[in-house]
Image (cartoon, rainbow, N blue to C red):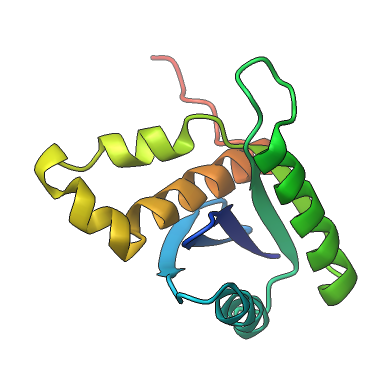
Length: 143
């Protein structure tokens, strides 16, 4: 199986790739200025990578409710399913962007943010969370 992880943003789309090995790896983020161009680039990546399932970040509120961004993600998931005929799994993405950003020195965050590296790191965390659920890591043996 081939999976594409997506961190959907208004300016950038973070991407990650994973397979049955259960390891998510970041891909270059999509940073096109026009939303239609970003969407076309996303569809191209999904097709080129021959993804069989898509894992999309679902930005729930801290109280588990769905705000506007979570509803937008759910609608985007439905569009992708209709257009590509692939299953799209929504995965709780709370704090993934914060976690991804915290691994970068504060002095470099502004420059790095524009590049999409943080977005793709967030997509990697989202996808890895999903892969860990379906391919649980082996339990460490106790000595």
